[in-house]
Image 1 (tube, rainbow, N blue to C red):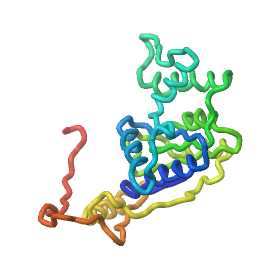
Image 2 (tube, rainbow, N blue to C red; image 1 turned 90 degrees about the vertical axis):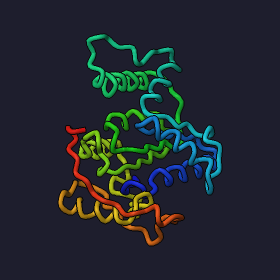
Image 3 (cartoon, rainbow, N blue to C red; image 1 turned 135 degrees about the vertical axis):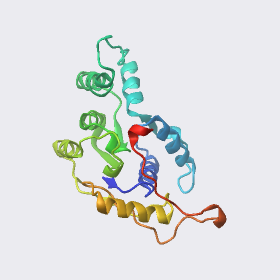
Image 4 (cartoon, rainbow, N blue to C red; image 1 turned 180 degrees about the vertical axis):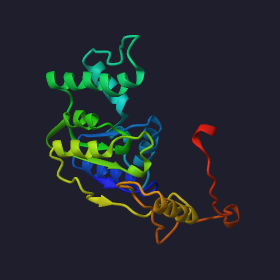
Length: 232
């Protein structure tokens, strides 16, 4: 398990593990929650020091993956009744169709299954993904409860990992430095989290070497502004 705040390099570490796996001729599945992250991860594959063709691994968002699995068996996973609640269908009913399918049929197996944005996933989805692991395959997950914008239950996720006999429930890799945010923004976030602590949150830390600022005049400092969500 890999944890760390925004910009700490969790996705980069996952791509590094994917690169190592394909060098060993292993099959890799990388699952994310948001479609936009898929493109970013594909671009990371082509950059140094990895520099490999992203088509050598399977990168999909979760619903895209279960749709592909269903189609491989000639089943339309997303066929639903008009009365079905859309959110419940996408998050529970459709994944359960795949879960049942995988218990009855032999799907493609992977040596390594990587999961980014674990904080956005449902526990049962991890159970489903574990079913396409080869014997002695590796499940590696990365996330940050501080970014739990969909209000998933982190305790249920940890319980599910426990049920799956996940060997590294506590963090095997903890990334603390945030390389994406300006230093003064990191200081603001640290202060905010000290006043409003979150369970299992990852407190960002200013790295020893910040990103190079080519134009110092362009950076005029960060300021905070409180906005109520209902006003947006």
